Amino acid sequence: MKRLIKGGTLVDEVKSYQSDLLIENGLITRIAINIHPEPDMDLIDASGLLVMPGGIDVHTHFNIDVGLVRSCDDFASGTRAAACGGTTTIVDHMGFGPAGCSLHHQLEVYHDYAAGKAVIDYSFHGVIQHVNDSILEEMQSMVEKEGISSFKLYLTYQYKLDDGAVLRALRRLNQVGALATVHPENDAAITQRRAEFLAQGMTAPLYHALSRPLECEAEAIARMINLAKLAGDCPLYIVHLSNGLGLDYIRLAKASGQPVWTETCPQYLLLDEQYYLREDALKFILSPPLRPKGEQDKLWVGIGEGSVDVVATDHCTFPYQQKVALGKQDFSRCPNGLPGVENRMTLLFSEGVMSGRISPSRFVDLTSAKPAHLFGLWPQKGCLRPGSDADLVLFNPDLSDVIRYENMHDNAGYSPYEGYICKGGPVMTLSRGEVIAQYGKFIGQAGRGQFIYRQSFHHAEKEAQHEPS
Ligand code: DUC
Ligand code: ZN
Ligand code: ZN
Ligand code: ZN
Image (cartoon, rainbow, N blue to C red; front, top):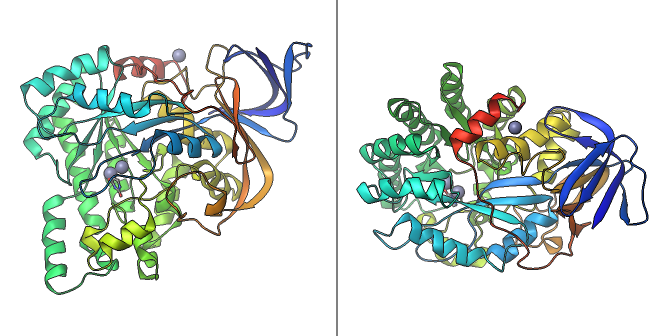
């Protein structure tokens, strides 16, 4: 099967250039100025369009059990929504398993969740819910045999790790060539503040944000950076950064040469704390919470200068009625999380590229090339070169569209971005050469997505020494 994408502007993480692109058997096989169409080629006219590597969203929680409830998107609806928004690879977070369970147990559970359902390619982040000798032992085969080269540590929630356990985990992750990722919030401070608010009857959604102010996050970021240093410079990836103070600590670490990276999410770039005063405030309950509006500009500066490395979503959906049923009387009972996997590419393109804040290449780096490098997917994914998977998104910068949940594909029942006017948007998504979405319609097959074995971080680091991005 051959497919020729003709007349478009190719955009990779360093440059934009006019070129045609040939796909054979799911791979990019040729990139050249004027490839002659042959009768056996399916021709796609890309004139006026940007041809970019498909998005890689390294932060989703499909089908996650959060105790009282389970998130309402599984690997079918979640990846279908992703595909319609121009994302072609997901690295989902394994959720917590039964107390004491092994890393391999959760991996099997997640393979079962995804197989036969995912419509785009996928992998999982491991989750460290407790630390003991056998967990530390298992990490090596998770990386080397199973292709799971990143692990999540939580500093809050049910299976939060204390600093000793974090240090032990980081040392071992460093040894086995894995990237440590962290949800950084100071659990003790949050627990104390939340109890004080609730004791005074302050149960409205705004107190969710006030109980976990940005200092709780920034303190935990600084602590994690120092623990990673003590672990012999364990590579560290800080998820869902929401504020400027946390970014200052990250800048300091980067400036000293420490291997630290960070991601932010569209909700922290576009929405703010005022949303907690709305009638439908519970829709916006997530952690870290939305911040005062001034934090948005600080994150945009980080995106522009390169101290923010990745934009991912933290897609974790609960129907609004469920959030209301659980959280109406008490914010602390509302399940945490927002949808976003379908809107990430469009929102960042509109707010970033079309508003002149970032170049198209920087957009590709944030949404695809950089996550591919950090998470061991490069050059199979995130890369426009012969030999790479033909995972592509075609963007029309002239398109203008309004976000309406009724046109979307996840199961949340609402979009936090309802009514947002997007400048530019995806018109076609290809996964391994196959057209799976077109103009917001999904046209692929359920279960066509494949598990991707990811390279270890050691390997990824060697790649980075001879690659841009
Ligand atoms: N925060 C959320 O809001 N949802 C999922 C997990 C998380 O850390
Ligand atoms: Zn988190
Ligand atoms: Zn998350
Ligand atoms: Zn290379």
